[in-house]
Amino acid sequence: MLLTGCASKTSPNWQVKEVPEIVVVRPPAPATESVLHKAASVPSAPLPGEGWKSLLDGRTLAGWQVTDFTGGAKVECEEGLVVIGEGASLSGINFTNLVPKMNYEVALDAMKLDGSDFFCGLTFPVGDSYCSLIVGGWGGSLVGLSSLDDQDASENETTDFMKFDMNRWYRVRVRVTETKIEAWLDDKKEVSVVTTGKRVGLRFGEIEDSKPFGVATYQTRAAIRDVKIRDLSADEAQRIKAQKN
Image (tube, rainbow, N blue to C red; front, side, top):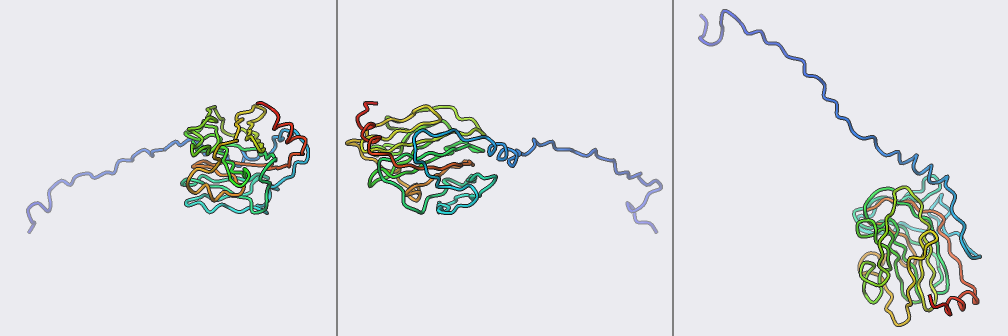
C-alpha cells in the first residue's frame, strides 16, 4: 500500500545545474621586497660638514632598542635598512647610548612605505630637555617641532605642510645650538626657530619613551637608514649663534 504523497507515477528529473566559478580579482600585493631592494640601491646624498659618525649599521639594532610603545609594530633589518612596521599608534626605535645635548647635528634618510601619518618622528635632546621633529603628520603632510611653549607641531610657529611621496627617500637633518633649532628636508630648510625664552619639550604621551634619541612612526610603515650625528666645532657654533636666520 502506498502512502499518499510518498510516490507518484512520474518522478521529477532532479538535475544539479553547474554554477560557473566566481573568480575574485584582487589587486596584486605590493612587492615590498622589490621596493626595499630598489630603495637600498639608491645612494644617500652627502652631508655638509665634517666629523659625522654613524649610529646605525643597517644590519642589526646594535646600540638601539625597539621602543616599548603600546601596540607598537615589529622592527626589522631588511636589505640594509631598518623597517619600522605599522602599529596601532606609535612604533619605533630609540638609541641606548649617550648623545650630545647641545651644539650638534643629526641626520638620517626616511621613506614612507605605507600608512597615512608621520613616517619620521625624530626625538632629540635640547640641553636638559627634548623635542621632536614631525615629518608627515596629521594625515601625511605636516612638518613641525613638537613642542614649543606646550604647543605641538600643528600649533606653533614651525608648522608647515608639504606633499610626501611613497617609496621616496627624504634626507632629514636637525641642528641644535644654544639659541636655535634648525631642520632641513633634503636641501631645503624647513625649520629655523629661536629657542631663547621658549619652553622646549615633548608632546604629552608615549613619545617620552623615545628619549634620549629615537625615531618613531604613527600608524605608518617606514624605512630609515644612515642615522648619523656630529658635534659642531666651537667656531661653527659661534658663527651660527651670530646668524640672524
